[in-house]
Image 1 (cartoon, chains in turn cyan, orange, brown, blue):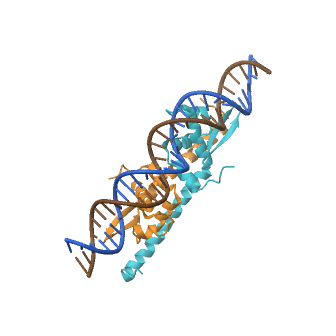
Image 2: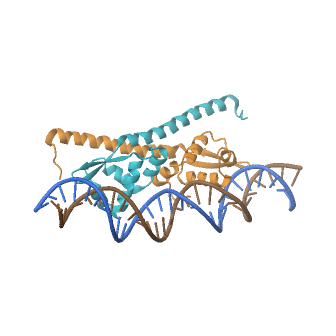
Image 3: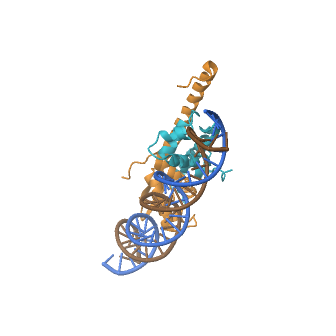
Length: 111
Length: 111
DNA sequence: CATTGATACAACCATACGGTTGTATCAATG
DNA sequence: CATTGATACAACCGTATGGTTGTATCAATG
């Protein structure tokens, strides 16, 4: 088992256009590593590495089908990343409310 | 103006725990670079660099206040990232629906 | 069981990244 | 206008990352 996918891994994995595209293509769960590699102007091994990064981040999994290994997107990984950003946004809303009330009551009561 | 914040920059910026924490702290918009730097076990310059990465990604901005520069989170950057992940999820839902109907109608009509 | 198709892995290279220290700039102030 | 506080920037270092090529493994098949 890879070292527990965390926010670092997830965001880092999504920070590359090729990998984001792989995630999209793997939504269909129909293409193997070789088919995926065919879509990009780089070596087979390079695409393998990208897929490995996505695996460590928990964004895709591989499933053996005959001699091929089909790559499929793990929606829970995506949800996790979205959830993190949701938290940020809700925190932000809370702050804004608090700041607004501060402004409307005392203008600048900073310590 | 920095080279147009894109998905690569945004996700890469969020792929570091220190930077995510800076984003959270900068939600208040009360701390300058030095105050922020005080929170982390690294040099002032290192924190400056992290803030620069967040700036390039469009996640924070700096605003001069006297001799200090206050760092504040740009919620639109966060929304952009969340929107990207939303797109992924909706695409996924679409695929699932299509696959489901395929399975229920013809089992395997791949091209 | 030798061959072939598909994937995995290792070694290597260039460049980017996260950290450091040191110096320079810029704005307020005595 | 010299000084001080706060930020910026440059040079450097070790390691991670994205790419390459080459070799090894593993599963199906004649």
